Length: 460
Image (cartoon, rainbow, N blue to C red):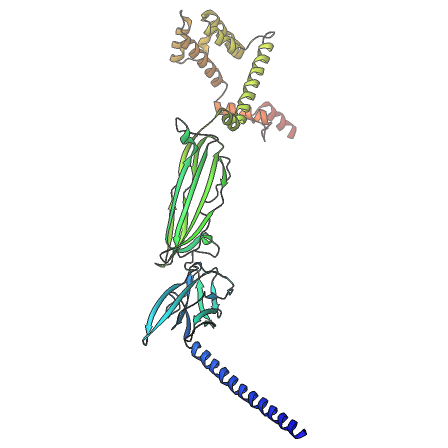
């Protein structure tokens, strides 16, 4: 009985050992086959990367210029699922994947058909310097020869490039951009077009819309197109939020920026909205160019309210002057109501009322008040004056002759008192208080005066 149990135990142990050995052998063969298959599949997927238009000399790109990084996957099977491109950061460079789809094509190699996927990443350096694109992980899913799919992750080689300002006139962060085929346009809209006469009035709105379209750039890199106006009170500007749009058409990247500003006219007169300029670096020709849009000069009509608001200070000044003049006239009228009027006033009033006798009497009174004379002929012996005096004594007397006589009488009496320049000096000195540095000396006559004689006697 014991011998029978021992034989059974030995048989079971041998069976288990044989089965374990066989399983280990099969597992080893399967693992080696899988590794061989993996090694075979790894050679069926390739990845390469390069920069567009870098060239063998690797000249620096322009700051803000679009730099295209190509990633190309190839397999001798086909892709069974989407491809994932790992994210990466590059300080000082803006990175964007503008196309969500790859360019797919096939090629024949050694009698096999290879499937290709070409992806594009766009880089925009924001400053000058040297940049290194790190290794980028790309995960793809390809078909196995024996069926099914397999995921594989490949990495690119680092890429290096340089960026610099393309022209000494440009600065980092300045109002310029790098692009190709850039265009600039504008359109105007005025609320005055709704008026029957079409004239622009205070309170009307002027809307200016400027649009920039360009290739090989980003809309966020296009600077503001409408420059702010100087705050002179003529208009109030209300800029709208910029409209940015980036599209792709037939393999070309198109970017658009649209700026719009509404101006509300605040004052009448001439209003000038200036011309606009935009500097840009043409990445195709390698030249610095400038786009210009013309401005407009408009005539604005005042409304009654705007006219008062614009000229109230002048009106206040004129009203104050008129009020002061009226008050002065009233004060003069009140004063001369109880006092005799000046001879000049009486002379003019007599001429206006054609009272020629009173005119002659007033002329003699003025002569007597100034010189104490009673004859007008003593004023001057000039024949012209004597002839004028004869006309003045005759009737009827003309107003023009009377005025001319009064003016000549005034001038000749003033001449007898001294030249006009001496008059001005003496009056100015009297007002300011000037005094002569030395007293007036008597003229030298060659004969001693009484004061000189007394002085000499005292010395003796």
